Length: 189
Image 1: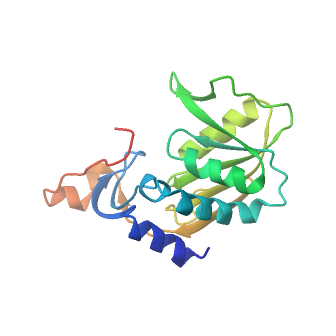
Image 2 (image 1 turned 180 degrees about the vertical axis):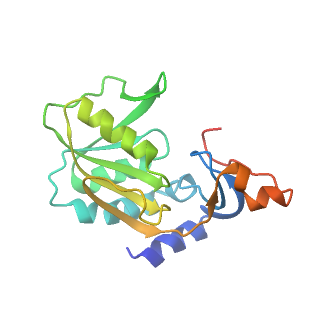
């Protein structure tokens, strides 16, 4: 799946929005990606997952992990394409952890997957969680990179598409200065 095809799916399903948004990172932006709107269609989720799995086929990942909740569906489909299992992390007392009886074996090879990477913060938290649990992170993948490549990781990284979007700290947001109010269409307020 090409970058153009990925973005076409996002646009077709309304998952790529333009306006004035407050991102999970706290930044404001003129573009918002709501991956749940494209991933609600199993055929799209499967196609995106298979495409994201491709660059990691030889990484030897036996487990794919994602931060809850946004990355779960993408990670599940990547795991399906790789023939791996899929786990997700959750925040407990502000710290990303494995819960629900999930565990990693010492040295278990893990691929961390996210739907959208903006600053890379949640992804880094999952990487730290994997390492604390004794796993080895062999790669980081995302459906969309909205960091412009700025979110760096010490392992192989791949994204299906890059979306160029303006982001601002709230106090410097030109959209706020025009009287526009930022909305948060995502899952975390």
